Image 1: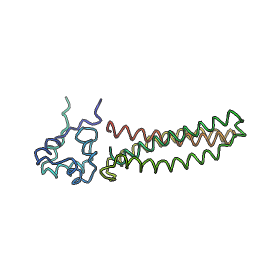
Image 2: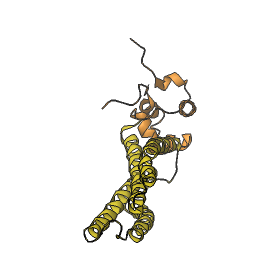
Image 3: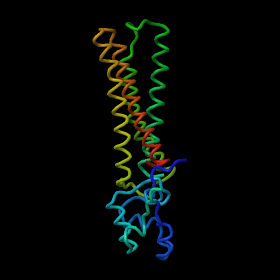
Image 4: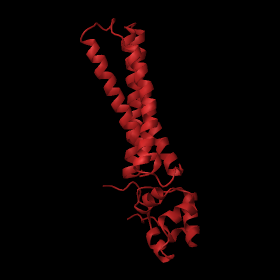
Length: 73
Length: 139
């Protein structure tokens, strides 16, 4: 299946690094449903810039440590 | 599955099911009467009413069977709904040419009313399928 976005992310790893933060807790802190966090983690949904900043703020890291975009070859 | 996605599934099943039942009733009546003589208004109004009621009941039953974590509608839900409405709206705009042409041709009310009804059901089904694909595969 072709993923709808080329944006990848490290949310799962960051959750683990932050005391196994649950998807539900991250969702609560970003004010979205847990299904949206799952969709973002799986690359099925590319969040808005604002939501991306909110997620990065939860982990206390810059945006590009959470989301990545492949360089053009 | 989120609360909104469950609602989309209920809406799809109810829309297809009720319109299918309506078609069975009308086609049955057409076997015994001409288009001009067939009584379609009451079944059509009933099917619209039943669809509204079944959607509410279906959603309640779905929640009882598989309760949602929350009933929150977040930004992703709104974007998916907007995408479904956009595609469904395009379909509706195109299909509405049919009843317009039928009315200009002054054909029997049966055809005009049913063309409009079919267009609305197609709009509902198309928009909901787009939403469900977006929920399942992403967008």
